[in-house]
Length: 177
Image (cartoon, rainbow, N blue to C red):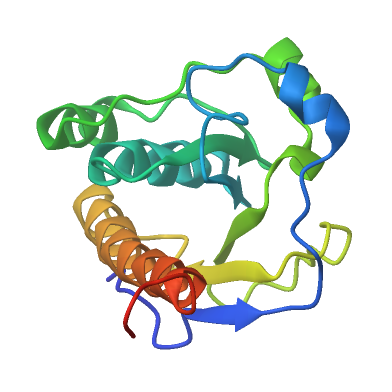
């Protein structure tokens, strides 16, 4: 069964989380300078990044957070059962083709969510360092329903973590903590 891994955690890593100057010129509906933070979903399995980013857009509500998926693995079709579950959950999945994927630049994002298979040896050391990097582990060979449940559980925790980050940022700026 897939489950939210107990090792899923917020990994605070060194890095400025800066926004490059060229970023201001971008005009994207899902991410860009109009958002307080921009979150990149980097998935070892291409489907994981798409599903996680779809959940993120569903749950972000009024939070000023932008996002984009960065599928590192094959971006095959979800398959009928997983697609049905995504539709039932109300997920709007990004329709990203190879050309658009090449245009995406991780330097445009100040937060990363790295999604790997449980026990995976695939390294993501080449990813840019960010102050806020979230690492998730998923069981690669689970049922579509269990996969959706695990991603949803991780996403709810991510939203709580992001709310804590926002509160810490607000402390000292006229907000009682």
